[in-house]
Amino acid sequence: MEQLTAGHGALTAVRAGRGRDLVLFHALFADRTLFDPLLPQLAERFRVTLFNLPGFHGSEPAVLPLMDAYLARFEDGHREFEIAPDAVLLGAGFGGLLALAFALDHPERVGKLIVSGVTARLGDDDRALLPQLADAVAAAKVDPVAEQLTGRLYSPAFRASRDMADICRRTLLAIDPKAMDAACRVLQETDLVPLLGRLDVPTLVVAGAEDAMLPPAEQKALVGQIAGGSYRAIDGSGHFPMLEQPDAFRAAIARFVGL
Image (cartoon, rainbow, N blue to C red; front, side):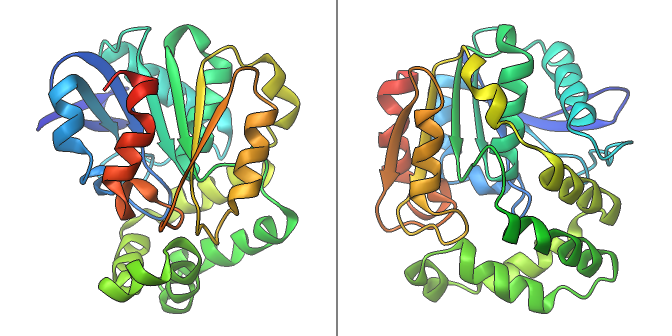
């Protein structure tokens, strides 16, 4: 894959394939390999650019823990990577929230939007847990947090097939602690609900039917706040259906993006 940098090295990405631009924003608890099961097929039809979120794979942590700092970084990437204005933007988890915010802020740069595992505002209970998560990463003591996250992120069947707690632990330890702290602050402070009515980008929400991190009903509610939004649920999947059920995920987005 082609290695890319933007913003004088502040943002890194990888690229594969040819065709219409498809930009991927990964989650906070998984790096860009989250999309590996989809990449070969997507790269046959699209020029796929996988952004590394701040703190991952050489992307520098955001200077300020503000949504605007993330969006400015991604705007640099879209410009310097010469991503076309009709690009499809696909984001998962925290990356989905960032994708939603980017589409609201820069609708001229997004042709279609797909988000998964996303709500426009986290619930109070989840927001209250974020400082604990940031502190655990800063102290490099993530084992209890990894166990807790694994139980909420993945379906029981998927957890039984591999050691997801160890994978989650290694992912958390690989994140720059400053980036984790910034991301947690952004998640705590972001409320996009009042802005959803102005979203003018065709949007598809894809949820895992067994998502214990963000129940499908909450994700479906997001669709009701977006004009022309549509919704798909993936059976047998937790928070990351593109990883657990890649064939079903690809089928769910196929008509929307023209696969």
